[in-house]
View (cartoon, rainbow, N blue to C red):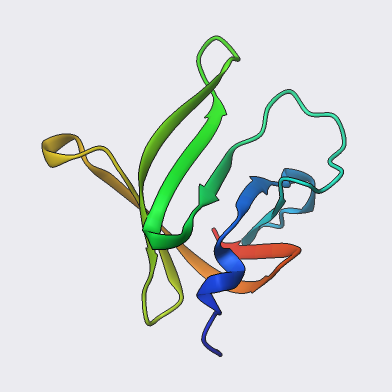
Length: 106
């Protein structure tokens, strides 16, 4: 697999669950024309590793949390939020990425 260009990832990505498969999840830029949905998860990957994640909370209102992100040598996108004992991380294995579509393995 070829190395993912980190600069392509530096934007606001929204889960396009309509395009998911059994093995992959698809994200689109926030500017994409999504069909109506009750709520969508997203993450904003800023330069210098700054992360903002958002998604529907328990009352269906959007909730946000801040964190950090980085892309490792194996095309793993690591999303970390919280600090100290409360820090949590998610690892998304990037299958493909361009400016209009991000695909990660489930």
